[in-house]
Amino acid sequence: MQLTQEGKFQEAKQAWTELAGQHPSDFIAQANLGLTLAHLGQYPEAIGAYRKALALRPHQPDIELNLGLAEFKQGNFSAAISSFNSAATAKPPDPRLETLLGMSYFGEGDFAKAVPHLTAASTTNPSSRELHYMLAESCLRSKQPGCALSESQRLLELDPDSAEAHMLLGEAFDGTGKTKEAIAEFTAAAAANPAQPNVHFGLGYLYWKTQDLEHASSEFQKEIQNDPNSAQSHAYLGDIAYRDNENDAARTELQKAIALRHDLRFAYFDLGCVEAARKDNTAAIAAFQEAERLDPSEPDAHYRLGRLYMSMGEKQKADAEFLKTKSLHQKEQESIIDKMQGPKSSNTANPGAEANSN
Image (cartoon, rainbow, N blue to C red; front, side):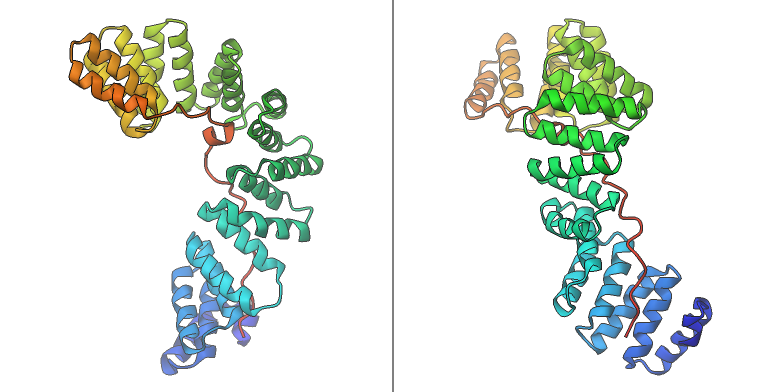
């Protein structure tokens, strides 16, 4: 314990390892071995020691908290949530646990469950931009636009020149159908930081939704200048070219998009339309079928494939596609948050030091 208190963790590890080996039923030795291993960044080994300690003496909230932290730092968010919840039932209300549970649910992608914990954490620590960012994004991704609006506005109060905060507010406006206001926020974000990832794509998509294709095309091109691998920007440039009857340019952009990402259903659909216009029926069928595979519930690919089969004299296949079309309904246009499901925020990097073991 003296070595641990002095920060001599390597020497402490050796001492605790020897003690735990000599006394495998000693809770104190196992628990402190876990703590020392965690300080050394040896999280898998720390997790093993913490679990041995809890097997010897279950329901120890400080050890469960430390175990949750070790799991969290390994990216094992589901296991971390289990440990944190167990610790929370035995401890008095603890702002650290609210923060850690919110971050863990956020990391797990369970945004609806993250919201109440992040709300409590940000209330306790109102000046934390990181918590407000995670809360705003969690509200957006769990389709709670009112919460997203208030948090995004609070972020802009904390950091008026933040491109990311303007983007979050723009996404929140778009989620409430206020596309004009969303465009204004994305324009402000692009002015604050023209190199911000996805800022020009987001602005381009908003212009595309309003049929302002000239401005949309300009923004998609700017995004590609920042990131040549922006698959969606290539896809939407292809869509705009197809609408302008520039089939060769459309085909080039759509093929670039598909090469970068294989899950862009609408890119395959547009490519099918382009190939059909070029009278390359084989390529068109392949593209429409891939669009159907990626989302069988969308009627447009079934309808266009049915028309193509009909033009080829394959009535039985055409009728099968038209029958599918009748039972389906075109989905509503996606909001910008649905389009910008990029990497999660990296604001979970420093959850704090381990709690002291009993």
